[in-house]
Length: 193
Image (cartoon, rainbow, N blue to C red; front, side):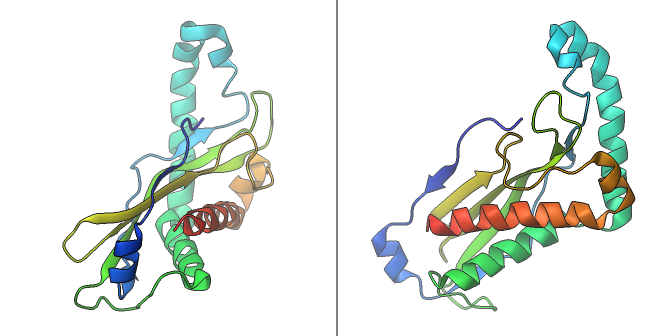
């Protein structure tokens, strides 16, 4: 489960007026491991530390298998998030967006902080996309002038839950779920600029 709340460093009015162009870096970072908490995965945790120790190896295997499934399917969370953040920035009209970096332009770097799938509740048999994204805008000198971080949570997720078998049998559903989560997150972050 993702814990914590959204983190934002608002841009001040002087920096906003000073920025004449903004580019979005195409270099998106992500964690090395995908997050996965599938059906029955929370059961071991109901029995405290011993239950967690017993279920940890099983969950690790399932997580590794799911990550390999995503890799084999050619799904890129970095590409999905970059496309949705860029689209939200473009559609907002709030940023003086430029496709090419110009002298003195600000740069927005996008990071995927966490990504994967989770059951929304301890006894659910379906999964929702988990996604946490951070955007940081730096000016030409490298000073951070704006940042925002948002995430989806298992409970109250904006994307409809789907059965694990569907994700296994149709990898396109994984991409659709992550794209819906990324679109939701991007709109929230751009709204904070």
